[in-house]
Image (cartoon, rainbow, N blue to C red; front, top):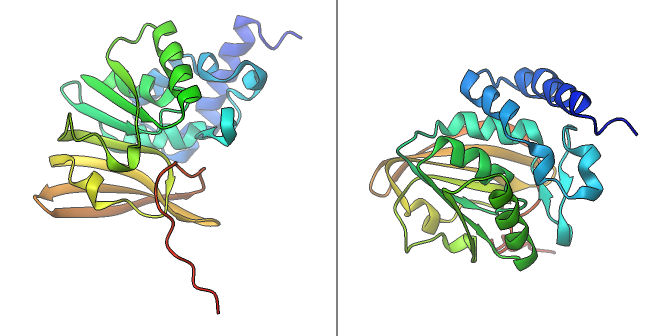
Length: 223
């Protein structure tokens, strides 16, 4: 199979950016350049490498998934991470989103409840030479109060709704992005902390993503 040749990989990466990501209103040149530079295929499990640049969630161990490339790109663009900022990610997965964030931020702490994924993310980030991202095995629904407050928090998966405990770990002026809701209707949202205990919420786009661990589902009444 020739699809693993460097030329074809670069063509597939180019096509992903031009055909999936740009049409999704990702026009920030710094974000596009980053997606061209960080090797997504190195963060995909070997069995699914052919899906590295496809417009889909890529399966990870234990029923988890990487977000679709255009969703990753859009969240990265909408968070406007700065070089001086400290970022908390909930749901390390394969480590790819942490890698993207680390290129833009001062420091990234990424939380992962599943040991097999935490180990995978750690190994992938190390192999990619990224020194400013730490993977912690922890329940992300509680955030990471030891290092709070953060400039940016990203939930790399879906939740029923964003818990107040996470919003409380933002600095004033900080941003939190998440995918909220129930299938089949979920929505990416961006919270900005405008004052202590006061947040502005903006809806970004509709999408569907795999659930993050540890976030309680709302009770369903049956009659």
